[in-house]
Image 1 (cartoon, rainbow, N blue to C red):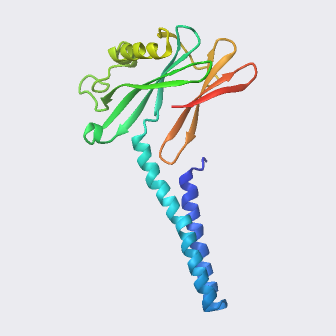
Image 2 (cartoon, rainbow, N blue to C red; image 1 turned 60 degrees about the vertical axis):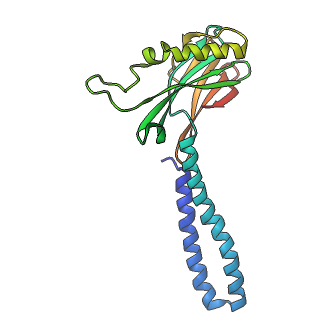
Image 3 (cartoon, one colour; image 1 turned 180 degrees about the vertical axis):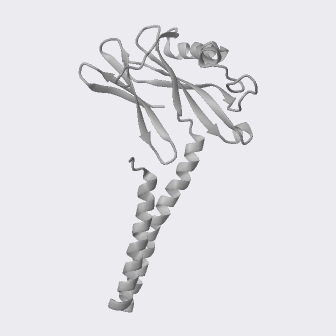
Length: 222
């Protein structure tokens, strides 16, 4: 079973309550009043650290989990036409005021330079996740191939990126996941999508490796 940050926070709070209960019982029968007052002062500070800090962590983690555009999942991964650099298409499910209380999905694009790991991020568009009656799929989204790869938004973003990078960018070969969950790039490189469980989200990471040396060259959070 995977132990998350939430488990440790709850476990710590319960342990603190047990310790305080035991210490209170012991103090009233074994210690003088001055010592008890000193313990009360120290207990107040410890309470803030043990109870207040985790509560603030939970509150702010929930807030940042909603405002950050971390990728919820991966659509597809492509090489650039130079057979080297990388295009990663992801999505982020969002439940907030952007869709007037409903849920929406951001369609995201990352361009990563293979030699350095430098990453360029952009949102292509967003759409509602409400189902289309009688048609299936979502409102504003038919399929990845039609709605993303053939979209005008992607053409615009690639043109903007081309100016930043200093060469023409376009999609090349689509990478296929191997049996070891890696995306092979030629004979000597590979991508791996790592996952880290946070309190409210699963943080995805693109890991670029040298297969021959079994060495991580760079990592990018997405």
